Length: 430
Image (cartoon, rainbow, N blue to C red; front, side):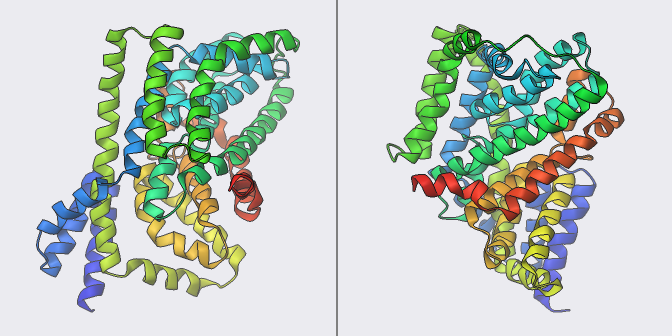
């Protein structure tokens, strides 16, 4: 075995052993890289250099700002207002509360950009409300956790910023625009699944549709939804960069939460910022350590070798596209979202582009695959949050989620094989 092959073996085997032993992913990434560098006899100063290089990016500064924006808005009393708006839109349908849950997640996702925040915030309100109205608790939780993945696709999503930075040269504004239709398609798919189950189980309808009530709720929720407009219109219109728009959105969110909705006082603001620090430390450590891992992968030519190996299986672009999705789904079962984006993108993106998948479209595919991974054991963070919020066991919750997995897989395949779903809006505003 050549020294390079042995180094690759050390890197990958040590990494996956630590993942299966449930090491924190940042430690697994850093230690496997360290072992490989020691084997190759390279100076360990490379580790510090690559960690600093990984987080020394102006574009990545948008990530902490978007996280702070989401926490401030999520803590500022907007959840109830968005639920009321969603109820005015779709509450009249059979299984109306399930539809409200899905639409509210679409609205809330555009503010938080986090499936975990969506599940914790909306789930704590909507799951008890649905159970009280006659919905099964496992169904209510399954709807909540699956619809929370819309927030990963609907801008502003900090995971899209991470992908854009990792992929290199991808427009954040184009990625933001690309997420709207796939997010809406996922919502429609989940609503169809919910409607079929609601009819079968005879879940209740809500009150009749009222345009007056819709306009009233829209006016109340306007200040929250305007935060998304500031970011997306500013970035797409070239008024400011993603990082600048995120900073402006933080200030706007602070004003709305404290002075308009009055859901936060200054003590609550400091508590929200404290929560942000915990999240940010995890994300930035992952980005820094993944930069070392990416450096070692590139040095050992792993992306090129992986591309040759995958293309060697088949040259059929349809099968290759399905294979890329399967790889990402399997990774989602054992890893969290940010590490998958940081590690898999440099390896899989060249393969995707070689079969005609646009980098922007591939970004949406990666994000949705990772979103499905958040709902699958043994590492599905959102699955465990939903179980904790509703007190429904993981076994019952996974069983109740099976029909919604199907809805999400159908959406994923549509996004994969119909590029216009992702690329129409970016091409319209380009």
